Length: 236
Image (cartoon, rainbow, N blue to C red; front, side):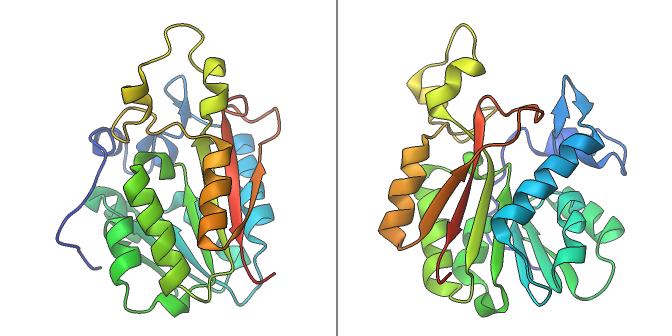
């Protein structure tokens, strides 16, 4: 486990984890509906979307940024040879190490994702990158810095999957009345983080030299009305 000098953690991130049972994995990372953990059907939809986006090959090594407690990372173990999960919560990393670090090729690191992408000593070890449900909690500056770092330093990475992004153009599907101020919608420390348009990711991908594909989950997914996924690819 490594630590950065500065941890950037959402103020609401730690409380659900430490106030939940040690093995209540989905509640720990707020993967809930009405306060209750989502169903296995919902998790299967998430895993299916990630597999479609990242297109794993058996030899691949996955970098899971903001991996939380590693429960979602572990669902991808059968599809890649090795993986490293990175998260800024010491408690969640301890859960990941207890339950999901099954062998040396499945590791977890305590670090802020921007710092990790800036300072990782072995960036070329990875070929696929995942950030699910957490990218909205980065400011525009940090989001763009992280993707720039991946572009420039992680040169073997062919695909990046950014999942469960709040869609600014469909905000009325979440806030039926009383849409918050623009200041709140652009605040990475707000409960849902930064609401961004699909065109924001298209523009950013183009600037960094990636191809981007925006996708939406099936209607059965609990947040399909107001969230989307983005897959960035290069060299394929």
